[in-house]
Length: 346
Ligand code: NCD
Ligand code: ZN
Image: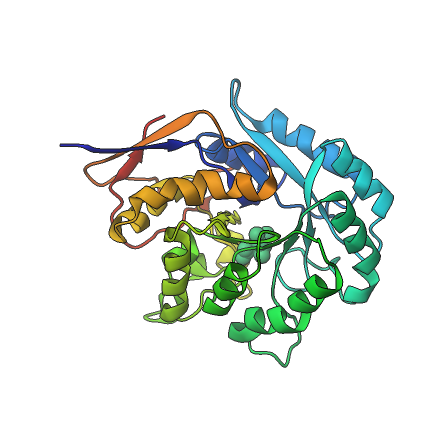
């Protein structure tokens, strides 16, 4: 008998859609299965003003196929020069849903991010006042800190101090990759949430490095030890309202990834739901997939859950093309390394 699973239409609480030809190619991939997505602002140049967010939103809407049911939830990129009034107006009008904090230099296109966290304190206080959530890329950039420790150190050195100095600030720890991240998110109360990516539920650092280097598994924050992957799977499948899906689907062309200094990012938009269903199925936790992908995120962002439903069916292995062709070049899909049995009914 075919196994079926029907859930509310999911949302993606952390997504890179890029711009231009790449946007045109990847936007339909997310719109096929997701109803809404928090759109990352790390374009070149970054989306720092309300006017830029409005223009980017229009470009995204123009890239969607006719009849697509997909709402981009825009964000502003926080800099040390962010204008709190512009931010508050963009939030009040519904143009932006959140603001993204990148420590300067932490990841792709983060050069305009924050170096001195005291400089953004007034903006963070304003955000707490108006109820605008802060999405945080939680890694320190101190060269003395090992890359595998950067998330745990960020929690102690930056995140926890920001949260205690800014009561009422609602924070999403983006793409957590460690047990420490999951534990901190779980203990943070209703003003703290955490997104977990699809790929961090699947790979640990051995997948990147053992038997030859795998550039398509390289993303930031970098995948950690197996014990951390297991902690993320436990968090995602637990049903705990602190945890929700943010794919961090981050397309880069193959030439950009396959070079001596390759870009960080895994492209998971086309096969994310099949992979998630496989992960949850293996854990005996299919009954928690809807909470993770469709319920906990809207609850944190104080938005209604989607009314539309999406059905997955289990059967013979589902094949995805290995690459998405774009006018910028091919983009390789994330390969979980095992067969996927869950197909999504369009
Ligand atoms: C993202 C990108 O390519 O924009 N890369 C990544 O490895 N996740 C940036 C980010 O979210 O850190
Ligand atoms: Zn990202």
